[in-house]
Image (tube, one colour):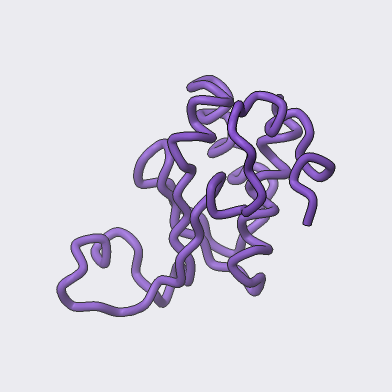
Length: 113
């Protein structure tokens, strides 16, 4: 995927040459781990992915856009379940794969820029 073509506004704000989604948004499968302190917030039965907006992306978009991303996700019901435990850390329930979840988040960011 050509990130410059898919997310031109976001990529234009980043000085580094980025060619992978994981440098912009990290999406990890959420699984039950009794030692995981996040398990209290992100129950794997309710949120099958953990989403982290990377510092690189945060710096590029600024706090205003970052705050609006959360609200937009909630308003549009993009995911079956959504929770923001921090401004840059979410739990989501989705049938999409990791890349699909990252793309949905980045599409919202691109729209807000």
